[in-house]
Image 1 (cartoon, rainbow, N blue to C red):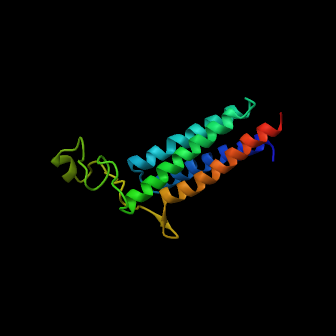
Image 2: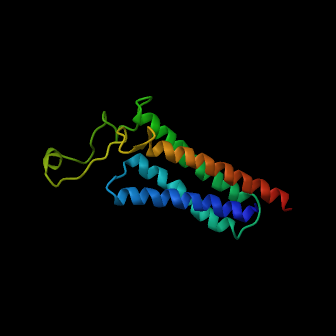
Image 3: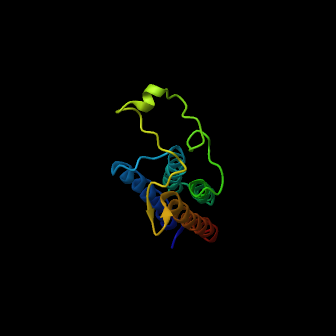
Length: 155
């Protein structure tokens, strides 16, 4: 495959994962703070991919690999928080303070919905959404690296 085909595949993979996240949200699986953190590097990878199709060289594929590795790392960190392997951010885990919410807000029938980062909201094959994001994102890292290597061969 050519450099641009690989870039298109990798950026398209991030678009698919980001689209899937929004579909799950639409289906009622509201994201926690860490879930939202995982979305930003995918958005960056999409933009990097669009730029990479126009800007020659290895820089854009390398930046794309960094973006994909970032979201994958956050996904695996989130998985560890869900599995109680380590502590997560106090702002969104069971042991944290619910900042900005008073007792009336917590007891209100139509109050804000608090999504905790240490609770698994959906699993497939015993793997949570952040785990799947990590797996697929590191697959995208490999594609970005192949694009960078292809750029070197095209000189």
